[in-house]
Length: 106
Image 1 (spheres, rainbow, N blue to C red):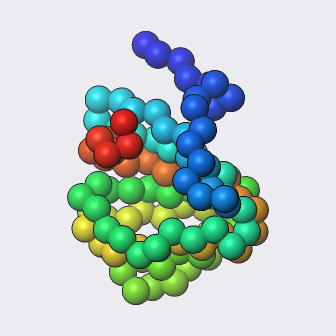
Image 2 (image 1 turned 30 degrees about the vertical axis):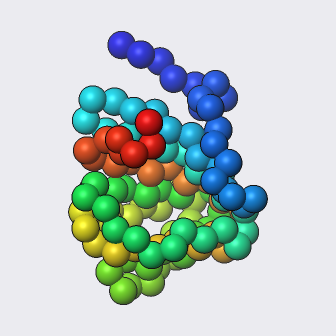
């Protein structure tokens, strides 16, 4: 058993508006993003199944060409290899879970 505290997990600054923390397990990666209003993730895809959950704020996702706005307490599942992007409409915190693990983030 391992215990993790977000307050102790290293924060990586991805750009002036975005930080990412990540915890890696044997079969999943969970990441916590703090994003400022206007932060954008360009359209991309990957082989991982992803579930994105907004903890606070509001984030616009485009998944497979469909737009949706998620607010605190809402989640979206993004299948593997499906193009998606995101934009923070407010200062927000989101948790993303990936399977298999994001080896590219270790």
